[in-house]
Length: 138
Image (cartoon, rainbow, N blue to C red):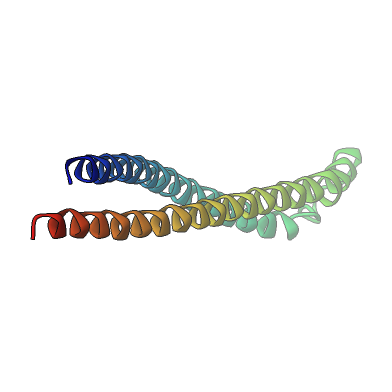
């Protein structure tokens, strides 16, 4: 009985150690997810701001009709060409960044689910060993 008890206690300690490691991993994952959610919110705000700016610039291709000359033509070319395309590129890149953050959050949540399931399994195994130890003394 003593060797069986020692064996069960060793198994229980090992499972409790694994459970504690998984719980630390869960905590770390939750912290990462929380940080990424904050980054996602900030990037989303930036995307909204860029979208508003892009829309504002869109109507500014043609300057005041009283403005004549070479500088007017240069401005029109600049406003309708590179500025517009630069805003679009920045907006699209921001959107891609936001998509990447969403993918990272999903990956971490899936990993979190795996650890949580592992913790449940370990709790069940610890309970079963505790029951076996208790039955040794009946």
